[in-house]
Amino acid sequence: MAGHNKWSKVKHIKGAADAKRGKIFSKLSKEITLAAKAGGGSPDMNARLRTAILSAKAQNMPNDTIDRAVKKGTGEIEGAAIEEIVYEGYGPGGVAFMVEVATDNRNRSAQDMRTTFSKNNGTFADAGSVAYMFVRRGEIRASKAAYTEDQVTELALECGAEDFASDDEDWIFYTTLEQLFTVGAALKEKNVTTTTQKLIYLPSNTLLIEDADVARQLVRLYDALDDYDDTQNVFANFELSDQAAAALE
Image 1 (cartoon, rainbow, N blue to C red):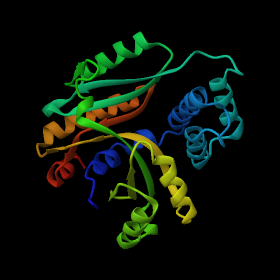
Image 2 (image 1 turned 90 degrees about the horizontal axis):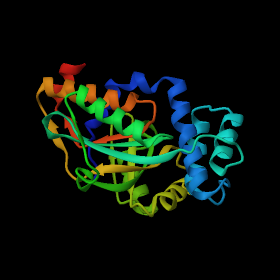
Image 3 (image 1 turned 90 degrees about the vertical axis):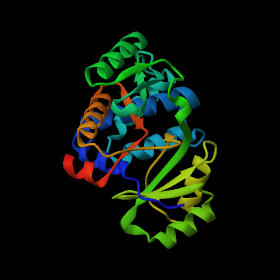
Image 4 (image 1 turned 180 degrees about the vertical axis):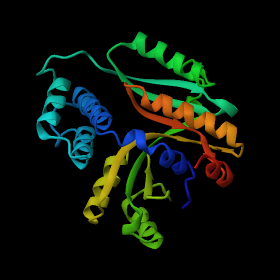
């Protein structure tokens, strides 16, 4: 069922932080390293690595930077061991947060997350405290300007997507955890140019935030979590009402 994702308004408001090329490269490099560590250094044999490299190239990351990240993952180049951790917490209004972190120091990152939540009217939570509110899904994005809703509906059905939605900029195809790369390949065969392809934590239900003060606090917390050096992705189960979004803008 198609729908408009008001969470995009939050991402649009905070988009300036993600525009910093150095931060983007750092996130992409870590994802390449983690993908190579988990599944080997061959993009042909490692779908996650192939996706990470395509994302890096879409951001014009230099090939030598990509190669170094792969070799760190396979152990050909020495470097600190990076591991993936998901931290959980609550924000103002009882909103749930899931934060994917890639770190070489688990204890440091846990303390930093605890401090970030505390300083921004949030609460750091134990593992499993909010995870049940989310489902693991694949997400594939394509430019909204390139396709009509009818075309996207047809593509979703033909390529095996579970669902689709839209935000201000993109059509979003949702897949099962196992079918992300299969659906991505099917879209490619249909000559669909995708902008991102990744696994996400999709909230089972969302909280509609209508209070402008709560909205400001939530965006401030989201910013702080996302701007943390080791953060890869932040997911939350809220959306803003039109009035709250207008107040922020």
